[in-house]
Image (cartoon, rainbow, N blue to C red):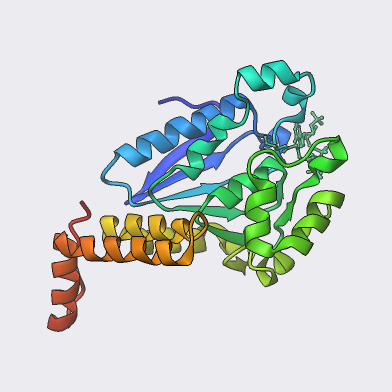
Length: 257
Ligand code: HXC
């Protein structure tokens, strides 16, 4: 399928989406978000894909929702069109998604990264929710996911002033899993994605579902949910293979289905 605002490629069992509006620092317009949704639909339907990497350019992961597109929006139109709902496709992705973030991840760009499961940051990455400076506020989950990731005080300061975080701060505050030199960002992200994609797909997907449940429910319900999924995995051929391979002292070969 031809896309105008993103590049979509695969490498082995890894699907790669590269945001590609370089002149606008990957500002996220409606067309880009629709294309991202289509790319995710394709990867989710493809049994040959076990992990997805979402990235931008060295200068910008994404500098936010497209301000030029939003400027004339009205409340009735944003309400009737349900503006933003289509962004949720990424957070509904059942396969793991790694955000490989270099440069600006601002506003909707930061929110998009936070919808992913793991954020790997280049040393030049900057994260922020500067919407308040435009007279608005985060609208794609920023106030909620950032608060869960780094706590109230730091989230309030960022959202109320627009202060951005350096990659080092984002790492220290727990927003990203680690920081790597810019030149190594894609190699490291691909290594991580290939590792995940080589493992049992049902086990990987259930693990993602279980970790995400921690943000939606009580501890006892979350533990119950985890236990049911754990028990279910004993119905998979991959469980037999993984444990047999350990006992036989060989590498496992997962079926991934
Ligand atoms: C539209 C944008 C854009 C954006 C940058 N550009 N960000 N266009 N929407 N969010 C465009 C600029 O207009 C310019 O194009 C080109 O990209 C390069 O940007 P410059 O500003 O010239 O680059 P630089 O001086 O390096 O500054 C980089 C920057 C700055 C610090 C990232 O561009 C910036 O502050 N951008 C806006 C960041 C922001 O407020 N994001 C939140 C958006 S609201 P032209 O053609 O003009 O030269 C949001 C709400 C999310 O995300 C809610 C859910 C949808």
